[in-house]
Image (cartoon, rainbow over all chains, first blue to last red; front, side, top):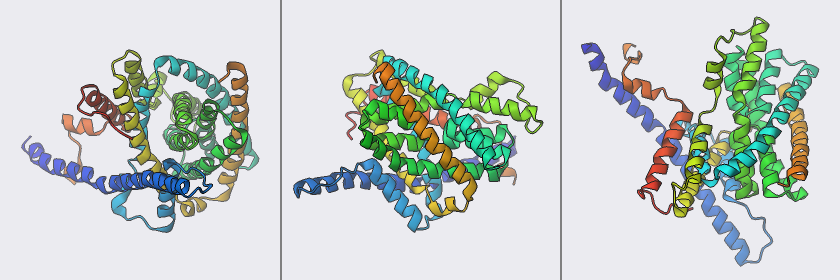
Length: 361
Length: 44
């Protein structure tokens, strides 16, 4: 007992040092985010003042571009790494707070449409990636990881599945690198295609949420088009994330049946463990707003806090995308991923256009 | 290193909360701060 109490100050000190270690990286994220906001205002203002025909580059793109330039031209000192990794926390915080900008009726209507499309998208993506993986003779568990990553929610789904199907580290890093590289490409191609097709905000938001794999990139791809599209992209992506447990469970049962993974004994506990809990936070905030727990000004404040959290996320998306590292991961998984993603993008675009005709989005 | 061994103290338990849970807690704290006007007129 005496030994335990003597250890407590050491542990508290370690915890304090751990907490302090994330500060430099967070300051870097905030600095890039703020620079992006300043650049958006000043570049657009300068172009307007001088009557230049210049594309309106939003803070989202500036934040990603600054991050990309830093991560691909400089070697980021170790002191910043743990703070940069918090971008996922800011993403989830931003999504929960975004719940304030949806009344429950919107969530039910758009979320219901999203869920219906998500089920079709997941089925088609799993079949397609499995077919392509077998065609290119990838390892079976790598095929499973790529299929789960592209069908559900990118990196989180791959990490969730890795343990459940006993995949090795090499396969997981292949799949993660492929999904991240393709997500980075989607950031630039999705908005360009949507502009050329003159898609409306809701249709585009649904497409970005269904077609872009990683949640951070889907959020950024939506916000790059418009604020309204960003909101819908997050909702559609959240509906997709909610399915993670079911898909990973199905694969875990399949690989256990093959004798290559542990048997899942308690399926309900497995589903709860894999369920992304931040979705419940999003729904709770949306519920509180729907019951008028916040004034109009307070809802605006919550929406703005969500935007600040996303700003740090977008800086992190750029900073953690290193094309040199990704190119080292091998070409075949990337080709399978790229082919699959292009086809999934076309399929989801078709789904959204169809939904637009049926429900008039 | 014996100092790295976890003990069953409540503070250790709280450190093992998932990222999702921390995000929800942080969002609820911010929502309460906004609701009770501790955070007012957050601009963008």
